[in-house]
Each structure stands twice: as C-alpha cells, then as structure tokens.
Length: 221
Image (tube, rainbow, N blue to C red; front, side, top):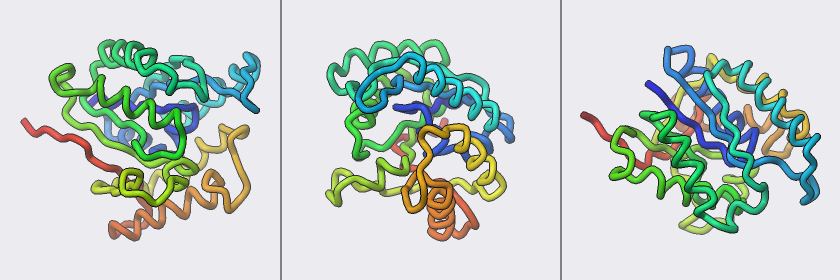
C-alpha cells in the first residue's frame, strides 16, 4: 500500500510514528512524508537554519528508509492564518501521490500549526474528494499532544496500536538526526521520554513497545 504522513513540522513524522514508518517500509509498503511548515527560531525565520533543518529531515528519512519527502515550506507559527493556504498545497500533494492510507496529527494538539493542519487535512481528505483513500488515522506528537489541556475535545483516545518493538531503536536513531529539536529528560522530546511512551503504549496493548493511533475512517472493499 501507499501511505502518506502529513507532518506539520520537520520531526513530527519521527516523534509521532517513526517506528510505524520503518515497519511499513520493511513490510513492502511505499511511504511518503509531507512536511508542511518551514522552521523558525525565536519567532524569526532564518534561511540557513531552515536548510539545516531540512538536511536533518533528509537524514532521518534515510534512517527510516521511506521513499519520498515533500516540503511545502509554509510559514511556521502562522499556519492558522489562512486555511486555504494549507488546503491548496495539500490537495496537490494528495493528487500527485494518490495514497491509500493517510496519517495526520491529532486535532487536539497544543500547537496552533498542528490544529490548522488537521482542519485543512479533514477538508482535503473528505471521501467525496478522495475515494481512493481507504484509511485516515491520527498520530500523537510528544510535546504537543501530551501538553493539551484536559478537555474532552483535546484528549487523544487511541483505538489502534502498531507493534514497533523491532523498530524502536531505529526511531530513536532517526530522532537523533534532529539535534536542534532534541531536549533533555524529562522533556517529552527526549530519547528517554520517547522510549517511555512507546513502552506505555505497548503496555496498553499487550506489546513490548507500540505507537498509538486514532482511526478516523476505514473502508473495507
């Protein structure tokens, strides 16, 4: 199958589902990642730093072994300014790649860019517009999903777990490519915290290590 991972920022694909990406590739699927935003630091855009971040994303791609990475280079921290500016390039990406499975970040993430990406994706991925898409799932992003306030509309309630026991170390290796985004424990983006989350999701599903997802739509034909 062909799968597309929509990542609001470079590193979200690894944090959210790096193990699943590696596993899907090992099982013969074709995986692409669409990175929506460029990167800003201290609320300022720097072309040189952004190129370095793109290089990090490409190195992480090589570690996970997926087929294609696609950069939309939309403005970081401002994706919520105009939803149409997200919808149009996402529509083109979906049309060009024609995936059967799409992963997107959770709607309740405590990040305005993430919430905007989710809303735009829901417009683009409606069944009448893309009947070839068989599954749509949300992934959780450490440091965004877990930081949301405890309100009903923000809670991540997974109903699907992927065994990543054999791929957890590769996920950590890919995470190390993003040195600018790394943080010390107990930050959610630290290596220790990412491993702890995988173990927790594994415990929930009877596995040594897992990544959790929320299935939004699934069609069997």
